[in-house]
Image 1 (tube, helix red, strand yellow):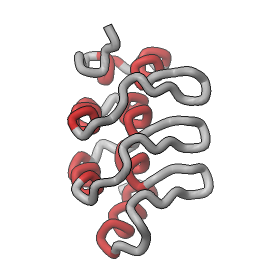
Image 2 (tube, rainbow, N blue to C red):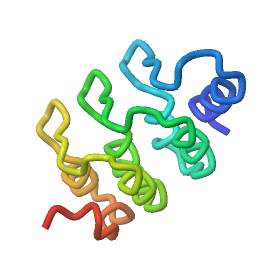
Image 3 (cartoon, helix red, strand yellow):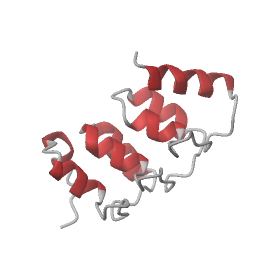
Image 4 (cartoon, helix red, strand yellow):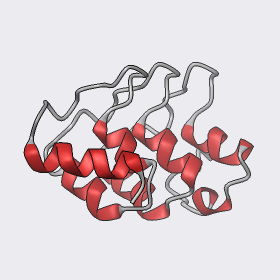
Length: 116
């Protein structure tokens, strides 16, 4: 388990801070969870009803992180929870744009993410 996953699981389990707390880069627990392939962690966070639309210092949302990693299950789960597939980051990239620019075929097959 990588550092982000370990920290996120510990914070959720112990409820040591509000679910939407950001770190120094503006990253939330949901963003950390979305950047992993650990769907159960994403579900645990979403069960605590975090704000889906928060973005980090670069303007990336949890959906941007999931799209960057190509995590199809997490992408779908975030979209079901109301994530905005049109929200651009500070570079003007939507989650779809980010997945495409990184050549992430895993994310590109999620038809719900496709803006067309």
